[in-house]
Length: 276
Image 1: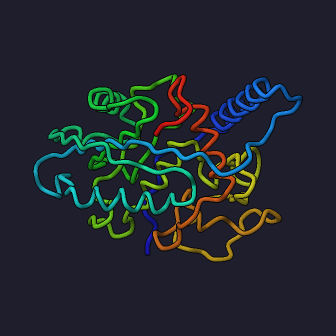
Image 2 (image 1 turned 90 degrees about the horizontal axis):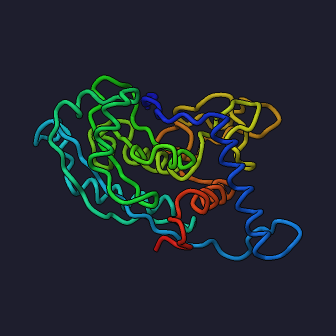
């Protein structure tokens, strides 16, 4: 398979650092409540969270080529997403679907058209920080498959929280290389994960200890590739890399723990201890 267009989500080292600072604040808060001298790691099984997912289908017309995704593909995407998250304590519920006929948005939105993105998302998004809004468009003038907001930025810009995806990359869609794992990748960003190759071989990287450092993104399924000597083979099987559908198949325990910390820090509504 050839390389698919990349994800348009960028995670700066500053954003990774701000998230880690928020996680430390959570630890110190737990320490205060427990009246112990050192932050304590949570013991026992993972807490379970279920997030509502609102689909916003932007189409130029009522044809599939114009972005009118059939309900069957949305259902298949939700089923695949939940399979990919099995064992993480995180699941996803299809809240509803809104269909929007707007040729201009369908054809004009790119990862850089801030005004169009803001207008679309602020008009149709539902729920709060705990609701994942997904928008599908044509990306006619862009090469990306998708991009996502990051939880650390929610309070700064709640109106544009969510995921924007190319309409034909769902299971059963017409894209030759992507058949559903892109939403798993982007929802990982929405829950605080960076790319496995973030920062290359140096610095904070993706902020996860059990994903070996990776100099650059991987395509295809290059078994045994090691671009940062001494750190272990590149995490080519990870959902947060760019490898093929048949290659991407896992989150690491460290990534699962980071997603749970991100939920506690950024996705749980104020005053709530669980989402569902």
